[in-house]
Amino acid sequence: MQHEERLWLIALLLLTILVRLPFLGLQALVLDEALYAGIIDETIAHPQAIPHYLGQEVAWRPPLFFFAYAPFADALLKSGLQTEVAYRLPSAILGTINVLLVYLFARRLWGRDVAFAASALFSGSGLVIYVNSTVLADTLLLTFIMLAMNFYVLGQQERRLFLAAGVFAACAFLVKTVVALIIPVLAVSYFATRERGALLDKYFIASFFILALAAGGYFLAFEDRQAIVDEYLHNATDKLPSADAGGALERLMRSAIPFVALSFYMVGFYVSGAWQLRGDYFVLAWLAMGIFALFGGQWMPWYFMPIAPMLSVCAGHLFAKGGLNVLGKAVIAACIVAMVGSTYWVMSSLDFGANGERDAGIYLAGKENVLVAGSYSPSVVFYKNHFDGKGGRGLCWSIPGEGSNITNPEYMVRVAQDYAGLNSTKLTDIFWRKAEFGLPCSFASFKYISVKRADVSGLLENGYIAEKEFENNVTVLRRIQAA
Image (cartoon, rainbow, N blue to C red; front, side, top):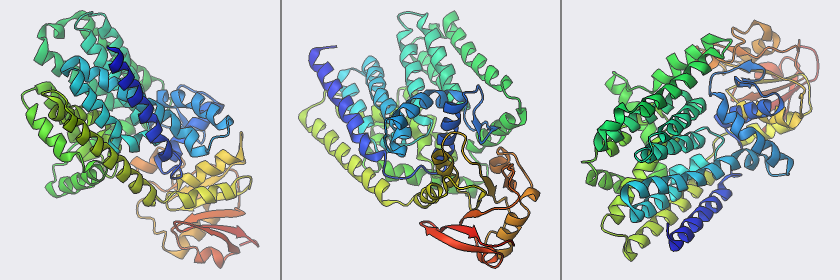
């Protein structure tokens, strides 16, 4: 690598991290981010082989993501950084590393000019910036995918490096389970189109066994085997294309809209570049993995992260196939500026619904006998527990099940007066079984109730007053007399 190339690469990496910093504190931790931040807190306090949330084993994500983020989040929180920034900054750093890995991968296969264009476009992609600004596992997942693919390519010169690729594939599994299976598919397609003899190499085959051992070990580590079975049966299969044409079209639209919203400047370049590379079946195999994102990533653009490097390569190849001239660089720079600007506007303008939950959670911190109820509101739970400090003061959490009518005034009265009678006490049931959930707790009655988007008129007639209201229809009620 020449001196000029190194300087350019350093400049790109610095720009990458600097561009991401303004995004980190724009919004409160929302939905899955709040769940994962809560698990990170529990990992900091009590590291365990299987992630725990509110004291229960959960199979939502394997442990490596939480182990990787926990020490950094702990140190950053102690340094006094804003809470959201402390949890999201590791993603921004890993996102910067991913730009380097995309550059190295593209350079080995398509040369310096394509690598320059691809890594720059990847760095400035609205989709990638968004995911790099969240407490989600997908940035770390992509780090291990790209490490594995770089080492598979290096294995063409030194076969034993296939074992390192297998280790990184295993790490990818321990970040996001079955999504890591993209790596064997890509490795096989790469060597099937470039060096078929490698497919029977003992180190190449052994690399897949390493991944299988990680998967088996993770499954066996669970005490609650039903939790991991549900994760595979429901979560993984939900990502498969639907046989129902109407349902499939609806899922496709829900997945495509956020992707296009974050990448609309680039969609034409992605398609044109892919058309130029249509004779490379390895490229097509990688892009084909997007079918799972299209049918499974409803309103979740991070599902497109595994194919983002190859989309960037396609666009980079379009700009640089005959050498990267001044016009090509200018167009790339203009695309990046447009994507960064529009992404910042989208992320700062959209109301993700968590700011009110955050404020309610902070308001409730330090208070006892608290119930969080109404619509699903994990951010209230996270911020209360987090600002309660180590050990916390505890809370109860009710989540409506399928068919629960939270607009009925009697619903909230029943939850408050008969909390112990809720159907399920297992966190794993709230997503896959749609059961009405009540977190086990020791409170017989509640002094404070945080309610989101539910009718509280029944509570107001049974001894509670609305003490404080927050954004997104979040209300904190306080008991003033026995019901």
